[in-house]
Image (cartoon, rainbow over all chains, first blue to last red):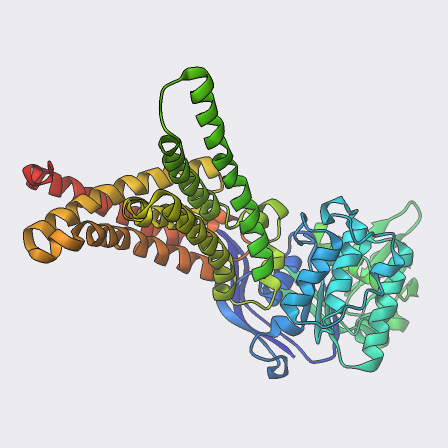
Length: 274
Length: 242
């Protein structure tokens, strides 16, 4: 369980969060999304403890012990590691800090990473894989992953996601992902949180969200419906509707389509840019 | 963490020791070319002092260098290490190697070395360390250390004067060391507090957004110490001449 209460945070004079609350139950796979610069990665860094709130608190389940970071796996978009270390040194350092007796290198094994290579010599994708492998070796209770997983190729991403699925099938792992592209992680996600100006504007279970967001292809703007965004074509327009309920179906002129998560989030984000 | 920091400190130590290899070279050049007639000790003793001072500045000032160079602050702060553990594992190996080098210098040069350079080397090390949190350049750090050494040496004279005036017999035996100790404490304790308070709350925000506490302690301290030294100088100029 992650409990955020009354969180305020700013970068100098730029306020990112003011009195922000969020609760993520144990074992939930949660997606945080929103337009660039809205504070998604900042929120993840606050959860990981690498940023400190100006006010408020972030509490983890007591099960995680006095220092939750011991059971918290965090991969940020900065991919911060000691770059002058070799892969072997980085693994050794990680093992010693976390007191691990062994290291399961099942992700790194799939890559062409050599243990003698310096981390600064690795590609972004290779660094991501190494970082993901390091955090998975902790057997984390909470996984905080920034949108960096898109820097790894489709094959390695699949292997990583398979590992996550495997862990999720064995135990209750809490996952918080920050992302704007979801086609291969959609099946994992249970809850979607959309941030706007440091506040939560959408907080829905994924199935509810899919039921509430629809695309309507029509010539004219559907009356009395809240339109998130629209795309105009020569002969018709696509209207993205939220919230939609089944009672409206008969009253709408046009074709109604279900959306996948990527399309849903694009509709929300498109609305913010409009 | 301690192992990594020891390796880092050892690297700086070996780099600083390079100066010691210049000593016999200078002596040979003297014997063969310039023929200034100086004995080996005339090169060896200042050589040790310079090496020790350079290592003290270098070891203290580069305490966060691997995190800055490798952009690893975020990784470091995500590890399950308290700030106390981090800073101790950074300071202890550096301080240990400084003590070893100081010990070797004392054995080679003699006990006088410890009296002359003992406390000042630690002032240099800790000044450099406490400045390193807010100063990214080792050159600017060096200027800061020089300023702090200047304040330290003037403070030493002030305390020396006070001990002479009020210390009685005690002052004649331990006066200079005690004066150095007090001067170092007055200078380093507030800097140490500022350093610790800043490091304790440090995160991955840009550095300039995190230095308010540090500067709000450091700047008034430097201002007050400078004023005090000027005041003492003016007040008892004659007492400071010797």
